[in-house]
Image 1 (cartoon, rainbow over the protein chains, first blue to last red):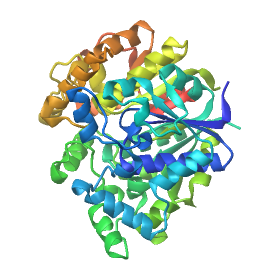
Image 2: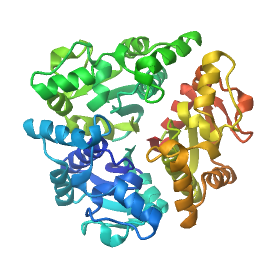
Image 3: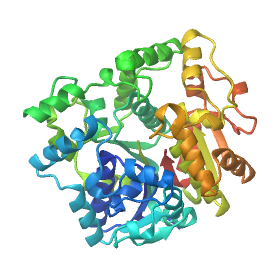
Length: 158
Length: 158
Length: 158
């Protein structure tokens, strides 16, 4: 049964601007009294990683190195200029007194937003449970996501 | 309460193909008798900007220059080739008698599609109310978007 | 009327990781007993093309060559390295015994997932009905998509 007081989003992207939009929507909805579930998958997993290097095999380590996780390492999808973009964006947001990604993640946690990690992506990218922040609500598969989404009035893929 | 006769979309992308898809869906839904709300945020704001240069500080002007707004300046996400892509795409669409982005925007306005601009993105990117086309229905924050989305049967993030 | 037992997604992207996520969600939902509709448009059409070269005019052939279709030719949105990325990704997924895109497409067909192609995109990109795999359920326009989506509890744009 659909419950319009619930929002479920897939956070697939690991780009700063999209992760930012995801957390703004998630915390905004939670602040409005909605029940919010974020399902982090693929590149989106970066947002809930601790930030240590990951991977065991050669390919896993390579992905871990090139796509290193951690909410503070996330860069914007445009104007990255080899890292300058992230700094620029952060500076503009700070100048405008917009909250940072780290603060948004903290707010989401305080507002009881559920943070689920996609088990299959973790397997493929060799990201272990220990590589994720402690506040993650659990590791689930697609069936778990479908259950959450089918109960939600708002469903988004970001 | 969810109303299946309503569609709310976030237009986050400023890429021509995605903005095109957004307007095709929006006008198609409105033509089918649905109530449609488009919430333009981040790069998507370009679609409802007049096209003048924006920004006051150094960073704002830089963003305004590199990411200049206006529905006619929007280019496709692939095959851009430093601007050639947009022309090519436009030519193919014209050859096939597909409507242009400008016409789609006009149609959306005529079909009473609500066009909202994201206040926070405008602040961050230093885009002023005067930089937006007059037909914009208003500037709202995430709470306004959540309200619209929670009343909608179809919710999309583009 | 919204039916929470139905999921409708737009597959706009032609990037391997996103197409992969789309099929994982589609087959997962269908396996959970949901009615699933995938609407392939723009770059997403690649996933349901046979893989032959397409296009008649010069521009159509050029698009057909640069953006050649077929589920086996689809590459990831990051780390493509001129084609290496796709191989790397495939290898990692194979090492982890994750199903391939081709297998996922086959599973979707077996689970009666409806595969619709966007008529307008096909016209613009000069992709003919014969260029699509035989299992495509039909060619529809935006009105057809809106009808499906307005009956769905879960709507996604990928």
